[in-house]
Amino acid sequence: MAGHSKWANIKHRKGAQDAKRGKIFTKLVKEITVAVKVGGGPDPDFNPRLRTAVINARSQSMPKDNIDRAIKKASGAGGEDYNESTFEGYGPDGVAVFVECATDNNTRTVANIRMHFNKNAGSLGKDGCLQFMFDHKGVFVINLSEEVDADELMLELIEAGADDYEVEEQKMTVYTEMINFGSVQKQLSEMKIEPSEAGLMRIPSMYKTLSTDNLATFMKLIDTLEDDDDVQKVYHNADIDEAALEAYFS
Image 1 (cartoon, rainbow, N blue to C red):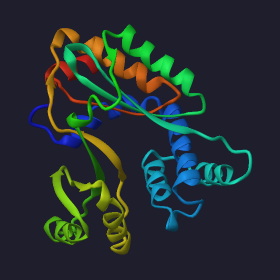
Image 2 (cartoon, helix red, strand yellow):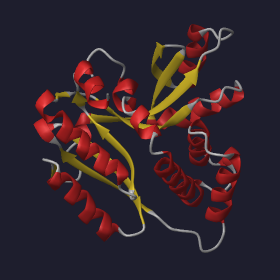
Image 3 (cartoon, one colour):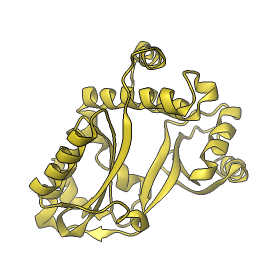
């Protein structure tokens, strides 16, 4: 979306996603499970990935009991094991689409992801074919209050490793290199500031114009991918006309 923030380009479908809250909760539980098993145990204070997963679960209004239950189940014997994998492909008009998955059956996941692309005017590419089109960044979204000076806050975060930010509608979006994600997260914790959202995201470094004629087909591809139980996140570099997008969702 030309003229809009990098974060807005990723999150422009949030309203539609909110309608699928049950599906979102399932994906959040899976992320908590993976975070406990590979991130360093069940204590968020000593497991940055789990701390991030919990923050995002809270931002989606997941009840505390659900979060605690997911952590307990993941830390016990017999909990699900998931393998993380990524897929890269192209949608209509050559728009790049990057898919992150967590699965207990990779054969099933590969077949399903390929099918989603093929049925929606897309094609699955080779591993690494889109790496140059996306920057893997840490992202923190912070709700600003009247008592918070955005410039002073950003100076603190720059010292901790942040390298860019945007402020829009009382929200500050802070970007970091992957290597500095933990230090910025720690700085926010020490300042007693909990982001409304946080995580490692794939930010497009270049955009591809999506024609209005192909908007419906492209959105069906994204919807189908996001509805897949094995898919955790979907990123793209589509530059979409704002009016056409609003008309699509109306």
